[in-house]
Image 1 (spheres, rainbow, N blue to C red):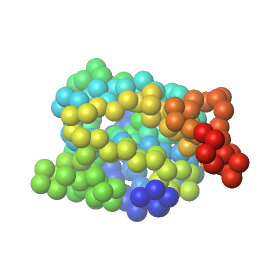
Image 2: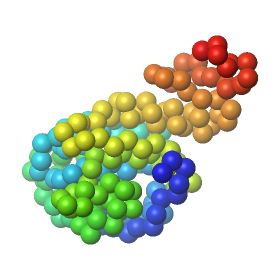
Image 3: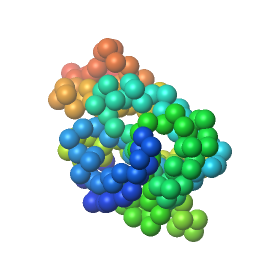
Length: 185
């Protein structure tokens, strides 16, 4: 899936107290995170979405929009947002995908359950997938590590010929792959 363009979709979302329409076109022209999770009103999901909400201002400052997606409806997202303190702090769009179209487009549908895997996709401004992470249902994700990966993806995109080594953090040294580096790392 890396470097493939996202597939077309249209969906309803709950965002800042309103219902809005979101499409694949909204993900282009900036960096985007599409953050799939199994279901509203569950256990691991609110911890992940709340953690992502805590990193949202930093992501926005980097021209990154976050879209959470589950196979629940946008109405269910509103109800969850209105009743959970953790979910109530979310400011990013919460997309409803009751038909599973978006979830299938990204290859994270659990068909026998009608639910999404814990899938994270970072999409560049051209609409191409740059990062894919899929976790088992019982394993929550870490938004600070996702932010680190976004920073690395943005750095590599802005600096052709350079790559970010393991555990790279913004401001640290990068690598310029060349014949001179072979066998020296």
